[in-house]
Image (tube, rainbow, N blue to C red; front, top):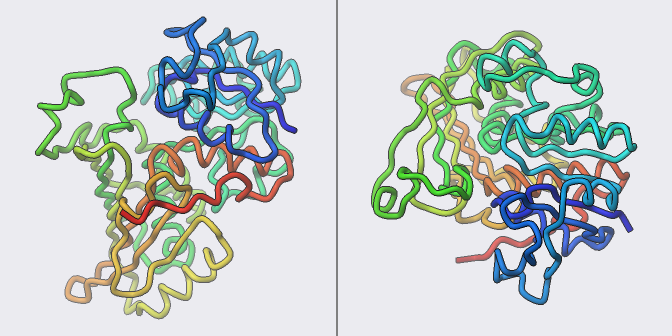
Length: 344
């Protein structure tokens, strides 16, 4: 059995890791930590885990000592010291934060206000979006787990971009997120009366996921890609709906598009290409590691529209982290993740 530990287990992503790892047939949840709730049983913080995971929240050091793989579910800026400790002790390390996602330190400094404390760790880490970069993940022990928007948008656009079906300088990503994406700490914007019965854009043209989206799409395209990215907050708990627009190159047909997506994703268990005429919906992927994608063409404006739907807490966070763990330890990627979404 793989001994797994979660640092930051009482945040939303950490709690979701606990849920998934507790049901994984090849994993024993060995230790969890929380600064805010140290010394308290996890089931007191999340009563849903009563009698299922009554483990007491310990320290970060205890998690590292007792685990083969350490998951870090921490705010940006807090993972680098932990990564160093894991690296020195030979632990696999999967970071759900942003500290290792960006390849360019200047981007990290500009968008997050931080620096690379240990450049050698960044050299040793790899970006963990399996459907696009699977081979780079194999054999690595330090994984930068992508964010939610940065999973939904690249998966929606990668095959069209790779095959030259869209104009790379015309991409617009219009995305909606459930409120869990804002984290567990309450704010005015996530307060129920402020959020309910409304929808608004936030961090327009300044969201930190912008360079990460562009980084993935640039790797796919083989040249620099820039994206207009506008996120919105929905009054729902879970989900990312990414509606992505780009101008088609020449007279591209839907048959060409579906062939490209079928070739790219036909063997991918977690990507469901929807039948023509259906549109991706966040309610159909809740609590699962699926990414549903629907493909559309507006012939009047020669515009390609790809819509992807994921659960931001699963494929956009904890589920993808478990998928990466499976790759690192040589397991079938779907192990512990064959979760059927609720029908209603």
